[in-house]
Image (cartoon, rainbow, N blue to C red; front, top):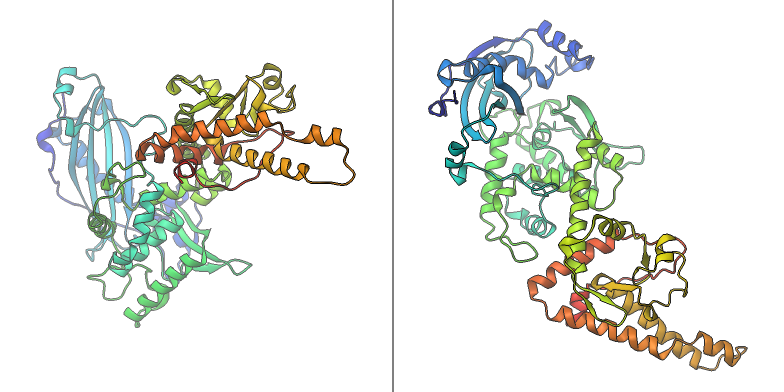
Length: 535
């Protein structure tokens, strides 16, 4: 029997739970956490419950909703899906917690149904302590005709493997960062800046105490925060001086606003209303609402290829994914990034590197469509049909030469380090190149011309045989010049959007290209090939 969708939006009566010191300490001992915050009664801030203790005070409210006969849930087929929790205020011994449940969605899937229950918990003073979104999946085949009848708006397509999706493109981040001055109030702007710079979760940022800034042994700034999701308190993250300046500025504003409250009891990002002493932090909903209004007011956002960017993706949590992806794309080792993100499981961190690999694969596809042989003839290939081995060779540079790729069998077998004609690539039919090597080709041509000019000058102590042997052949110069001209010619025929895509692809490939040991190398810093061609 399917779930009863008429139950959506139904709210259940609150369930009250009295929190005791014994219950808090039993919960902490159950997972071997001896943090003094849970046991030391002499702490100035007093005893607080572990963040996940909120599960115990909302559980009965959840069960009332799930066990509601009107919902028609088959408990034998129900499995836990997701648990998204926001921690807004600490739970302490003696608190009377009131928790209520509301069914917010029921969706039909091809292999069953999903339901989401919202749980809201507050203490005896009316302060919210926790917000939870509990999602469950009810297994079992459903009528596929009924599934097809669901409206397109209710069905969200699954992204392809490695689809970035959640991180924000650099060009969008540039616009957002340039527009921070119009984001308000000051607490929301500070929270957003800290999120962009540090990649911390929104709930961890909003939970920061006033005194969250420390210094390491070298005097560099360190952010001290609690990882609420993983129950890891007092985490330390190195930050830049610019981020530290944002925090110290916010600290000054908070002290000026709440001069009578002891600094140890203040929050870095206090709520704007119903918060006379500054002890209550800004809520997640406040941050998300103000952030949404700000993004909406920025006008149309477009990606590098001119496509309109969906503003619904620009949410505070996206800054964490953007921070992670930025570091992964920059080649930061996975163990270092895991430490920066405070991940215990490397598999969680590894997903950002899979995204990077897919982006490189897409870049390979783009530039392979602009491939040429030594004569400058376009090699028409279906980039989408590239073999896995071709992608792999491109990534690790197994048969790379200084300004292209080599297909000569003995050189390929030697990993690109045994060219039988000593890298005279312009005279070899095994040579292939593409638009991503245009800067290398240009530099090589300049080297050839410069070498010819030097050798043409009178140099004492060099006999004519050695001079003639070292002088670049005119035919090689002509072929390299013709090859560069053909590549530039093809680039000029692209549209503006296509040139932008090629530029981006070239940037990705050149950043990740490896050059084999033992081969000549070319050191250069040049503008993008498409821009060069249009100059």
